[in-house]
Length: 295
Image 1 (cartoon, rainbow, N blue to C red):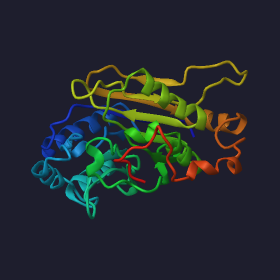
Image 2 (cartoon, one colour):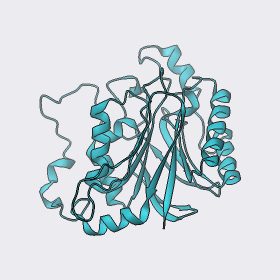
Image 3 (cartoon, rainbow, N blue to C red):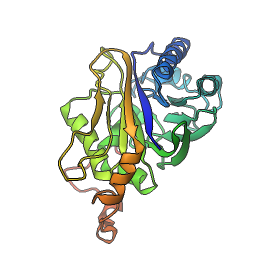
């Protein structure tokens, strides 16, 4: 199959100015294509720059909800046309209109302009402002047509990556690459956690974060290949950005990843699902009880 190149669009946003965000996103997508990208990945909730009101501020929440956009609305369709023009897939993020309360969503647009999947964040940060969101309820995976051939792709958003179940579900559904929009401080522990998701599932992972000063940048990608054929350990890191705005390109060798998945021990090779029943229990024991948690 060869190489799939994912461009991590590390940007600072203009908040609720959706026209400015659209224009900037377009410029960064064009730069990504000039660099040879097959997929361009936005940071989390790009159309409004991950702006969320305080839960108790009723007026601000009303104004925020009015910023939600439809999956078939002009913001998304603009990037569908761009994906077709550039012959490049675009993983676009936005506050999605939804019955009751908006969702934190990503739509993967293929190089022909078609929507291949739309995913809404399952693990919303209910301890913070994301209590205002409607959580997602599934982890879809699709086949994405690229210039190098088809690849199985899924998505998780920010806090999702802090739960091993998110990447595990995507791996079990066949994902080879996991796209991860982000909007938080990417310090050493979160980056180590993300690297672990790649290793334990033998998947490639790519994450785009906001540039400083909105967040700290450090968008990163890991190819999921932790060991050479002779079992020597190798560095899975394809790219880790600094704090500045930019397009950071990660090159995933899909042939090498697939060969690795056929021979190594992780992923779904030696799991014991019959022993994991407690993982689906709704019961929460101290010290993990939280009054604001939704299940």
